[in-house]
Length: 131
Image (cartoon, rainbow, N blue to C red; front, side, top):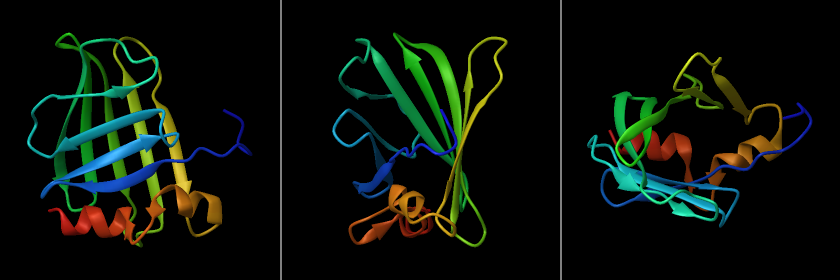
């Protein structure tokens, strides 16, 4: 993806201890609580049997595992910076591939800030509140 392109990641609280990630709005919804259990992924062009599980590694870091029919397809780490202004999403596909790294920098680009700040909840608020 070119550096000057925008990618919107909508984040919302889900139940007592979870998050919903919506990419691009309305296309794919990833919803899970931080209990390590598999949850189905909904959206266009999503293979049947696709799930994700999530767990909290620390106050600002989540680990997400994607599977199709029980087989791991990728792992992902979502980290919020100490100043709560930068979100880094590092995706590791299974196999000998380099990771895909996406950085949402809210301090430099209002579009990126909007990527993890929607409505009355920011990702920082959600991650810190759901520990």
